[in-house]
Image 1 (cartoon, rainbow, N blue to C red):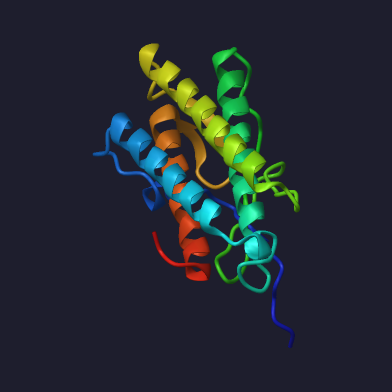
Image 2 (image 1 turned 45 degrees about the vertical axis):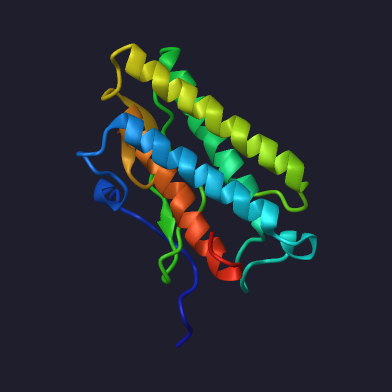
Length: 185
């Protein structure tokens, strides 16, 4: 009998408690996300050029690919939030898929493109982070912080406060995957 290695599509959303703490305020979530971004950028700057485009482990992405994935994810989130603010219906994203070892399949459009330049990635990561946080702040200013606004294939439709916490958790998750390949910050 062969080992199952294909991802399995979920038939229900994962619990938001994986990343969300209802006692955590928006400002704290945004600060956590910024701290995660800072740690990621410090780590990325410290990666030797010879390792930048090498997988961090067999079957894993390279440091540059992780950074590109985070940029693409932030852009996807920004696009979905902006569409909601513009009055568009939520995109139907369905359910995500999980590998038997617990790895999740990246959202369509967030898969990294290999070979990206370190400085371009660093700037793109900072910009994409800033843009998505500006939109989350807009939800707060408009009094729409708890309004469902981000369709997500693993957690269902999230509000802006949950989205900020998810971004911070996403940075932490990938930083934890990257740190075994380098010295901790």
